[in-house]
Image (cartoon, rainbow, N blue to C red; front, side, top):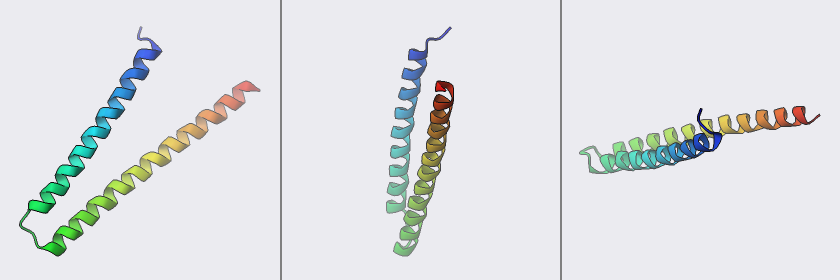
Length: 81
């Protein structure tokens, strides 16, 4: 059986790798937008769309994490009674 500490460490490591690959991926997308042959207004539009997309993803992830934390806190309070 796998220990809880090992699972926690692997989870933290996978979150760090996911964050690193996400930052690298978004950076490469911005680099692609910068070097493409499109006109400047199109580049600005693409960059804005990419930024809004990333912001929406972070908002959704933050909301999900907040809901999980609230549920965990409710369960802890309920078990304490």
